[in-house]
Image (cartoon, rainbow, N blue to C red; front, side, top):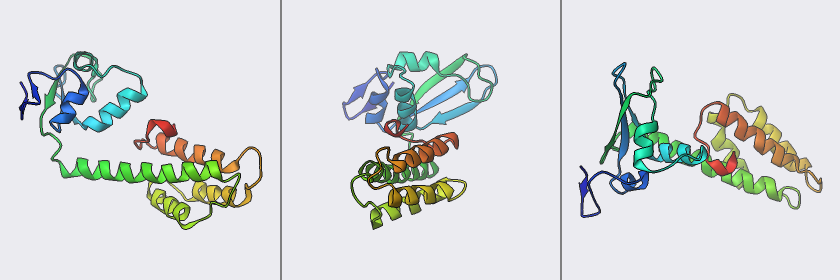
Length: 179
């Protein structure tokens, strides 16, 4: 039962209801007894990307165990469950990474018509460096942005797609509009 300043009484109807009470989702496996607490924002992003329902009943009956993969789980909403410093730091890093991707996305779309080798693009590339295994893709983007002006296919856009693919493959939470 949830109770928070008259906003929500009773179980949540959707994942957005948990957002109102800064909640998280705890999944307990009945088979192997594993317990995992999911960050609500990451869960919402994942379910939107996979086009799954945000309804609480669908979430409760569709969350498998992270250890054994069993579907016999108990899913609970935990109000005020986002106090964990590690989780907040991870979300901050994800936000920073995705904002840098937004800058690069904008630059890659404008690179065909104008010079985008400006400090903002350079800063975005430096922000993304810790998330990639090597700097080769970042250098490729910069080179494509420098030489791609006037070219019809936009090599910077292709380099941007490679960067996003590498980040997704590494398991980083990339916003759906970049995928």
